Image 1 (cartoon, helix red, strand yellow):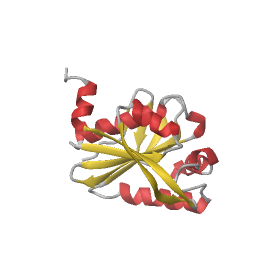
Image 2 (cartoon, one colour):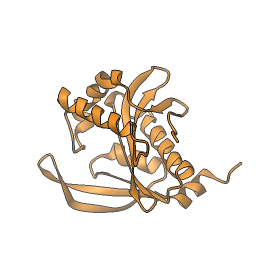
Image 3 (cartoon, one colour):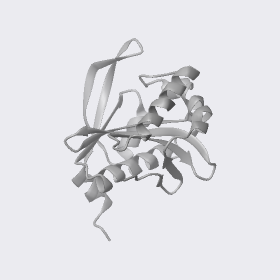
Length: 185
């Protein structure tokens, strides 16, 4: 059963379309956006390959990963992407990328909170986790704003763009999410 698109106060989280290429490539070449990512800046071919992978995932009857476009409804503009990958044992990994022109406006936390709601309330997950480079204050700020807690920091755990990266691990449990959201009305 499909659960998409997801509508929030200002956003539409939806499957990707062929006409999304230009908007995706715009943020995928932005040095500020890709600074802490293990990808980018993208060539046009790399952006098309990513879009093709997402189309293939969208075509699956059973999706173990959800990768959605983040669209600002008022502008009808794609500003990023958000994903949640099922990791087994009722857990999932959350990740997101957002056009730098839309940072610090609450769009990242609005989209991420919607994915937590999807994971816990519709998919029945037990735990959702996310990681980010320790220097990526914007990303861990989003995680903290939506109620995730820092579980630890891994020192030089992965090599990204030729350097060893320290990584923060954040997570939230279903019961923590439920307590934060309050009892059903």
